[in-house]
Image 1: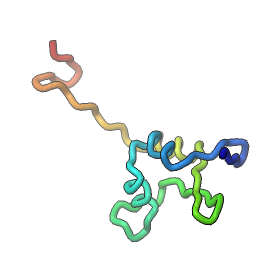
Image 2: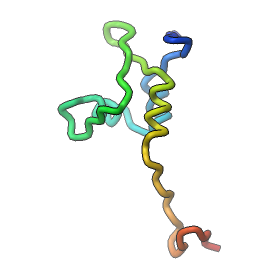
Image 3: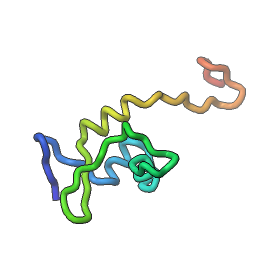
Image 4: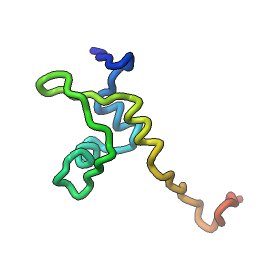
Length: 85
């Protein structure tokens, strides 16, 4: 079932996981104020039923874009900016 808000189809948890790279438990840790991993900037879900929540796509995308980009792993022996041959 697709649910829309502000003209956007709301995201299910697996879709948020795919966009953020977080596991389900890590995602909920970001939302839990008692967790050491709590992130107040993480988008709050929208309740759409007694036990169902969804996320607004634009909020999730904004959060992802606000994260620092990680450097990829280098191949052993390669210097930064050089590919190993």
